[in-house]
Amino acid sequence: MTADSDPSLPVIEHPDAIRVRVQEWQRKGERVGLVPTMGALHEGHLSLMRAAKAECDRLVVTIFVNPAQFGPNEDLSRYPRPFTRDVELCQAEGVDVIFHPQPATMYPEGHATTVTTGGCSRLWEGAHRTGHFDGVTTVVLKLFLIVPADIAYFGLKDYQQQLLIRRMCTDLNVPIEIRSCPTVREPDGLALSSRNVFLSPDERQRALQLSDTLQWAEEQVSSGRDDIAAIRAELQHRLQQADGVILDYVTIADAGTLEELDTPREQMVALIAAKVGNTRLIDNRVISLERR
Ligand code: AMP
Image (cartoon, rainbow, N blue to C red; front, side, top):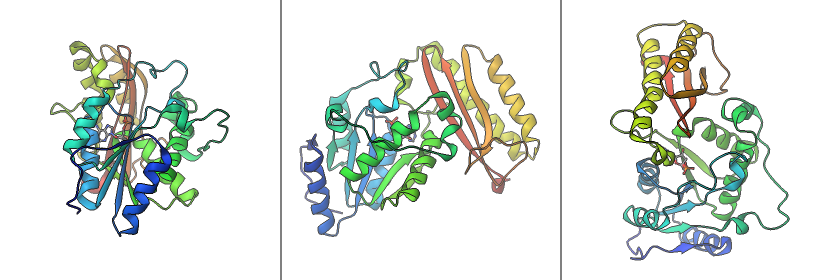
């Protein structure tokens, strides 16, 4: 680990400036970790930073609310942007530099090239948010080219996203290792999300039905049930009845392909997306038969 950390955390907006800095570190043999975020940082983001600090010499955090991954009727304009607080949190975690580009820098006039995702991108989040994963993978690939880190850290909270980023790196020979880190939750089970600030106290209480129901599904499998189709149907029924929750989807899928399952597999994932009030939340739970 390096001891010469700057007391004031640099915020860099220009791609060339950050790339040069990263390359300088790497020339000295330092290992660079990257945590891409949209800001509005919480303990989930901080856990990724801590994972990166534990195995890298240098840590770059990117803060960029990526317009390309929001649909026309989604919450781009109201997405929280508490930038000063984010910088303070990064400083407290020992981040070496923040990359904070302007949208016009990332998508200059005439921008016409994007990543097209295949595979599981047509399912679940991809089916409900047209173009979302193309927007995510395009910006992540751009960030990987601007910040040619050794290891990049993503949260399992966005389960399908981390699968598709791994797929992209394999398919396009991106020389960056991907780490997927556990979902950080509130003590009562609610998955941390930058969007949780939009929940009223009442909605927050209702939102617990998402994590509670996923936990129930895992308990059913852990206790020996093999009738995945029936558990899935029960999950759907519970959430369709749930007070103040408008369900987009809930399923139990193969953890690698995200194909919906009727019968058990070694590694499964229960996935959910629902609106609580005006706030759309996602959550998931990996269910492993090995743990039975
Ligand atoms: P976002 O700022 O929402 O784009 O998230 C940036 C990164 O933080 C992504 O890799 C997310 O999966 C991850 N992340 C978001 N929420 C959590 C959480 N509760 N626990 C762990 N990682 C998270």
